[in-house]
Length: 411
Ligand SMILES: [Zn+2]
Image (tube, rainbow, N blue to C red; front, side):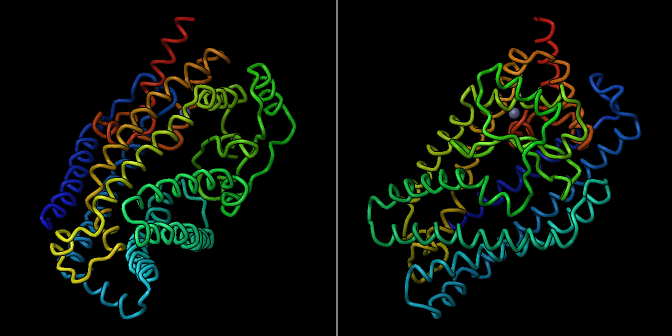
């Protein structure tokens, strides 16, 4: 059993190395024809340097975290942690919060220097970082506090269900997590996101009226269009839909607004509304609910498995250690379910593009937006298909542009 766990950890590490290496091998100095005029040779080479730097950085980080995890397992880290936790308190739920809390906190501490280096060395070097050290520290602290409150609350509930509800505990956990997820999505735009960014309603003007005209045309009731101060952290741009019901809103980064024409911005918005109208958001939610159902069911089967505990040389069987061990062996299954949702997500991008062209027209503006975005963020134009398959939520820009061009010919 222990070897099985180790094999899983090593397998996902090796897969990562293989995919990243293949991805790097695809680098060419030839600018793709769709991007001639948007990229000059010098900037294109810079984009490839950015890819190389980030890939190397990612590999170093995953090597370090994999080695630390293996060392922790082989040096009986779980046994020491369990003994320490049992000295602190006799209450199983508190023991669980301490055990898992310490494990998660340690993982966060290990990730911290990497996150610092990524922001203040790599992003800085390529001119993306706009974030002060103070903002970085604030983000970390806020993230920690929120994680402790929300994550700690949810974890207590899960521990309590598994301590007290027997066979059906997994079902209670599933329902609780789904309700919690819906609740958080609902309140996030007004309670959580404003802690990190400022959201201001889009001021009256050409952009707002162009957006409103389009939305009215489509019979789409926009609850609110907001601009977000993304420039506080990075020069990279984005747009998204958030929340649902009364609190649903469209958010455009200030960096997006400043760099794109009104036509492009309405095209981006039409694309986002396309996701909404074609029920992409609902379908993603359903898939995520189903996959968490599968996860909790398997978690229930895995709970307090004597074989697992003896493999880790643990004297005491507990709910909380079961949760951590489960998270180690569950990763291949979760990778599998994430492949499904990534595949859906990439398909939906084409559909939302087609929707935007159908309802707004201007396929060239719709193609220009992601083209400009990918040039500005120096993103990889020629990713390896395996990399796309395992990680991309969006199809490679060139595929989208080609599809849009074919749509514009059909029109
Ligand atoms: Zn999209």
